[in-house]
Image (cartoon, rainbow, N blue to C red):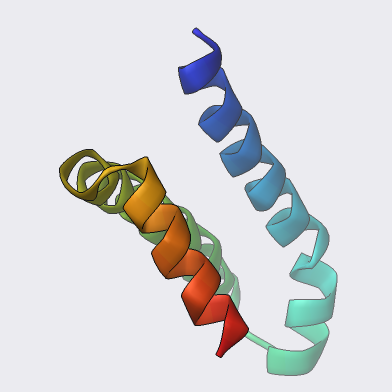
Length: 76
């Protein structure tokens, strides 16, 4: 249960941060209402899609290899 709850909590926290940033985004980009809705929706879809993709990649490569790859990318 915790394996499923943690990514869901992180995803909801990420979207909360995006919603808190909406006033700053609106001031800088000056989008219309429909454009702002697209920004929020597409961000959520991309994060959800990447969660599925990275989960599949982790299943194929293994956790240790994925962690080493992420650490190497951060170091460079």
